[in-house]
Image 1 (tube, rainbow, N blue to C red):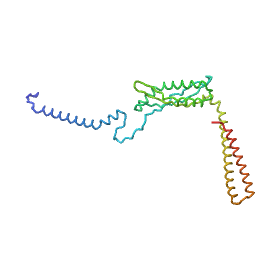
Image 2: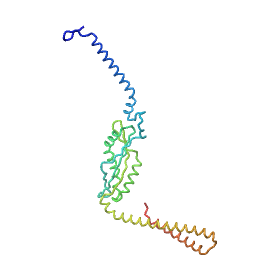
Image 3: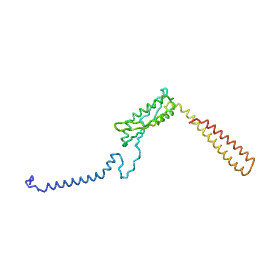
Image 4: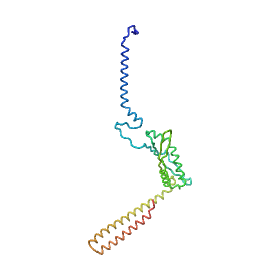
Amino acid sequence: MADTSDGRPRPAEARPHWAIRSLTATRGASARGWRWWARNWDRLVAALQDEEPVGLGAPATPSGPLIEQRTAPRQIVVPAQGYVYSFHIRATFAWSSTVSLRAEVLTWYADYFMPQAVQRLTRLAADAARELAPHRAADLEIHLQQALATQSPWCYQRGDLEVSCTPDVAVRLDEPIRRAVQPQIDRLVSLECRLEEHLQQARYAEELSRRWVVILDEHLAVAGGDPELATARQHLLSRQREAIRWIDELLAQRPLS
C-alpha cells in the first residue's frame, strides 16, 4: 500500500474504482456512438453521393441532368461585310454533365470553360458575318441557329470529368446601321398595318355578303321565284365575288415573311 504525501496510507480501492468508472463511461460512449452511426450511416452516404436521403420526406429532385444557364459576360462583336460595321451577338450557354454534380461545382466548370466556348462561337460567327451586309442581322442569327442545331453539344474535359454546353444566340444591328434603317422599318410597319386593315374590311364584306345570300336563298325557297329577291341575290353574289377578288389582291401585295 502506498503512502500519501502527508504520510497517511492511500486506500487500496481508489484506483480500481476510478478505472472501472472510466471503462464504463468509455464503453457507454462507444455504444452510443455506434448506435448514432448505425442510424445515420445511410444519410451520410446519400449526402456524399449528392442525393436526397431516403425516408426523410424531402421533395424528389428533378429527373435528368442538372443544367446551368450562363450568359457570356459581354456581347460578341464580329465585323460585317466590308469591315466597317459590326454585328453584336448575345450568347447564352446551357452547361450540363453526364455525371451528378452539385450546382456550385457545375457553375465553377461553366466559368472555367466559358472563354473557350465564347472563342469557338466567335470564330463561327465571324466566318458567316463577313459575307453578310451590315443590315442583315436577322440572316446571321438564322444562319448561326441552324449551324448550331446541326452540331452536337460542345464538350470540354478537365481531368476525368467532362462537361458540355449548348449555345444559343441573338444578333443585333450595329447602332449606326439601326439608326439608318429605322425610318424604312417605320414605313414598312405603317404600310403593313394599313394593308391588314384593308384585308379585314374585305374579309368582313365577303362574310357579310355570303350570309345575306344564304338568307335570300331561304326566302326564295319559301316565296318561290320572287324577281326582286332574285335580283338582290345576284347583286350580293357579285359583291361577294368582288370582295374575294379584293382579298386576293391584298394578299398578293403583302410581302413574304
